[in-house]
Amino acid sequence: MANEDVGERGQWLFNLLMTEFHDRPDPYFRPRFLGDKYPTFDSIVEVVDHPSYFFFVQVKSTARGYTSRERRLLVRVSQNDVDRMVAVPAPTYMVGIDTELCVGYLLSVNEPRGAISSLATRHKIDDDVRGGLRDEVIEFWSSRNMVLADSRFKE
Image (tube, rainbow, N blue to C red; front, side):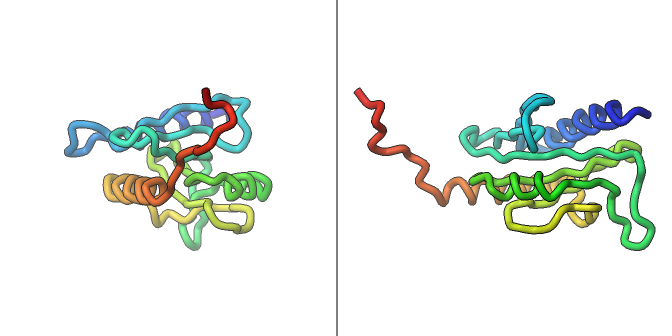
């Protein structure tokens, strides 16, 4: 399978994983693809019942599988992309997608760190991880006063 096909399949799988309903009437998230030319991030993801709360995601897809010793997904994120993710004043995550098994794994990239050469499989995207992610994003935004007071462009 061509790299482009793996990446596109991974993006579709990411959207599917993030919009699972499970036992709820609505999904937790509404992902929006940012386009192929957007630097570093692939999607902005809104919390469905709090649409002003959002986070950014870089999706890395692979059909190459896992490392043999620790079962880490074989995906990479450059130091430049990690640094750009950390610099954003909003929640940022990397999602690794195994396009063969149709599973994804989540990693927070909100604090300085080195380049990512493989991804731990500890946070498999399932209903528990989606619920925890929703709570984390809501806690982040609800603890901030995001009102732009005294704008120079008032009437």
